[in-house]
Length: 266
Image (cartoon, rainbow, N blue to C red; front, side, top):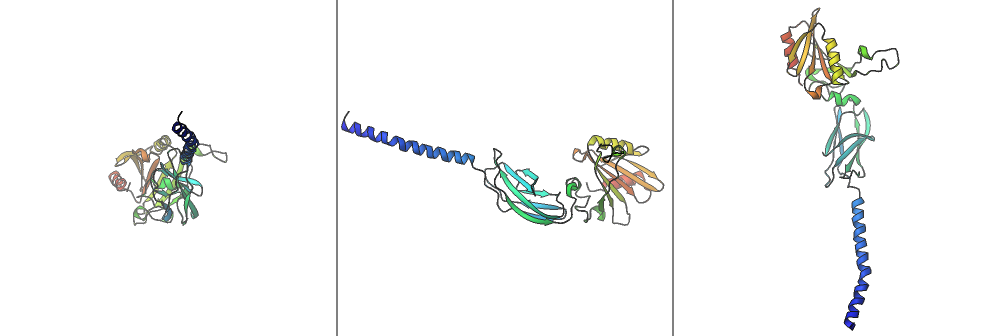
């Protein structure tokens, strides 16, 4: 081998450790990048309004979505950069937002603290199904200046001698509402445990009533002793757990009751 060949071989051999080190460095960096957590969101705000809190934040690139929690309880998970929490009780709350990458890893949290007024609490998501009819909070007003309060009168199948009654659950929530105008109609809104339970309750209530069809489903009317009662259910699957009962001030014809039902802001 010539002197030049020996020199080239020596240089090549000497470069091998350098190449190995360079490859190792880049491989380590690649692993670190793969294992790195996603960046947290910025600009988190929590703004309370009547019966709810609006949470907003800035978008983060290359993430699958976001996870929002209130005092440690998850209230939103999805791709958007805003969320509405309707289930907070009155008081001081800490909202935290984390990003989620394609592998499910979570970022560090970014948060905001706010103080909320009285709302429907755990019933907020149910009341929000009828936002144009029902008030957003117990101390707010809804359609026709209607005020509402939680009233619970267990249906017969729930009753029993045990502390928990029969152990069956039919009804999640019942709101008793009264309009603020001269007509003084009363409105009761029931949220049932399932569509099947709703239909069983509806069948029991409708005995002796006159069936009717309204803009959003079916119902029945009963007029006795100068009082007209109207009970409605929905064909929309989104409202499959809901029935509305209207006790009209004074006796009214079926046509008048149907008109009253169709005027409700659903």
